[in-house]
Image 1 (spheres, rainbow, N blue to C red):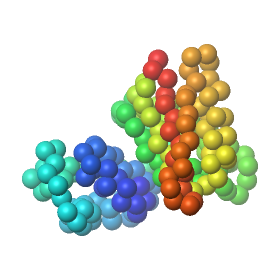
Image 2: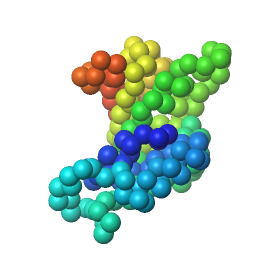
Image 3: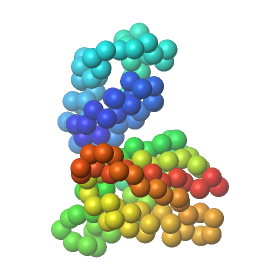
Length: 168
């Protein structure tokens, strides 16, 4: 979430979106911009899923996404994560980074439905991110390993990793 408009862009494409960030000010700012309808695209094509204000309303939550509420258990089909991996991988010491990475894996397991997908967009080195995801998602009991695929986004610095939770 942060101050990114990615969630709003997905909402305008018909997605039901929950934006989450630990920074209350960032969440409030995005919610305010949505309420003022300042996050809508310049030209709105007909979208049958829009509300009377012209768009689905995204949800906003303040909290630590690495420790999601129990009400989010298997709530999401897709988690779109932009930039969180960047903050997890780097920090003052390796031990705290590894703890955050494990929490990240636990969070994904908790909030994604079976067969759900992580879409991770980042400018952190793709090999480093793949290693992080392999560490926390593929070292699972037989049949519980996630499938992963990497993609070039066409942007010089950004890459996309898709990871699918086992349908078990």
